[in-house]
Image 1 (cartoon, one colour):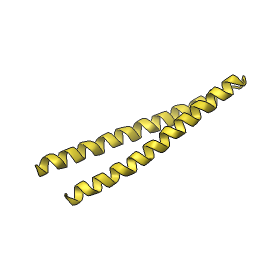
Image 2 (image 1 turned 90 degrees about the vertical axis):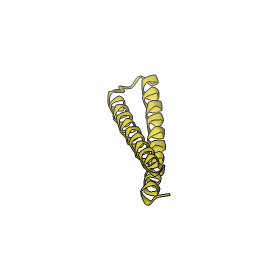
Image 3 (image 1 turned 60 degrees about the vertical axis):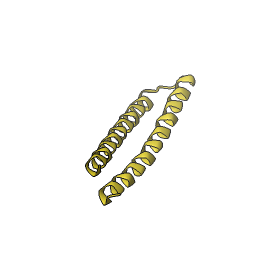
Length: 79
């Protein structure tokens, strides 16, 4: 296994942790929006925060996909 591949695998593991955290944050914010709505409160700010969290999650997922492509390229070069 190459040092580059090892480094990318470490980056992938870190990305997975960040994605899991972001997914929990999105789920928690979705619950917060629902609770505010059910209580008859204004949800505009909570919905904006939810959108920001969802956008961050998408960026993290794109970054993970990029890491996987890099690993695949390294593997192809090693073959």
